[in-house]
Image (cartoon, rainbow, N blue to C red; front, top):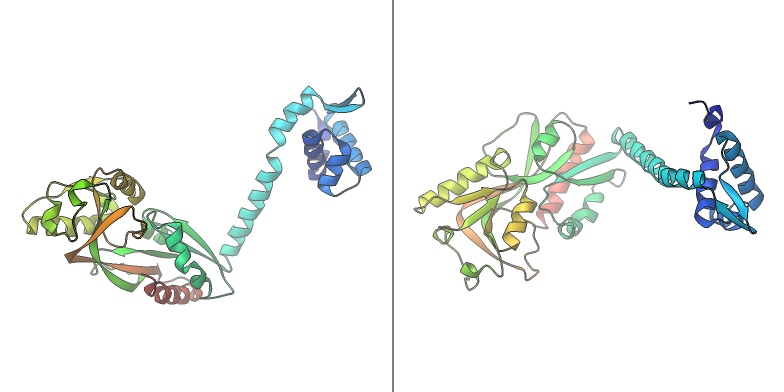
Length: 302
């Protein structure tokens, strides 16, 4: 770069330029930035000198941005927001070493369901900050330390990971969820496993829910048929297909709003999953205590 003055540009000059370019008026730009008009003019002059470009001109007494100025405005108008966002993210990263706990929930978890107990979770430890994230393969993210605590369903209570502490919250029966418009179940009050014969069942990939599929296959075959299962990239996509009336979703603790009037749902006998809160065994003691307290709080909400 031959424009050596470029390295003398500062954020205040860029901020002044963006405000003047937006308003094409020095006084309004000064009011926006809560500084004096002469200071805005001084910063614009310094920026033009550093760049070696005329950014504005007076045309019939009005301030007009130059073609070069328009190009810079288009390229720079998001720069301060990007820098501010980067600083916020840097603060989050810094907090991860101190008082930030990252809590992972499955994609199926609706915001309304989270809000039911999010406030209570913060009371577990008023000194910490909590960041809630939704993701697939929660146990993988936990083991890789991308998350500190996870909330999910385990479909095999005998499955143990030596590096993970699982705190059981509640056992839940398998549930069938269908759209209100799904005609085969529209008038049903209860369901048996045999009612799923010939139905399309949407679920998550078997790599994540292998034990779930084992239970589902076992219960269907026990009742005389093999299930027709279609795997989706995540539970959210499974629920979309269910909502469109293309089939049903079967499993535990699905967090669609069952009181919304949009769905029919039925509990099935004979198969269960365990809702758990989990963290790494070698993690900070603060996170372990948070996980235990959070499990007790969520137990009262599901």
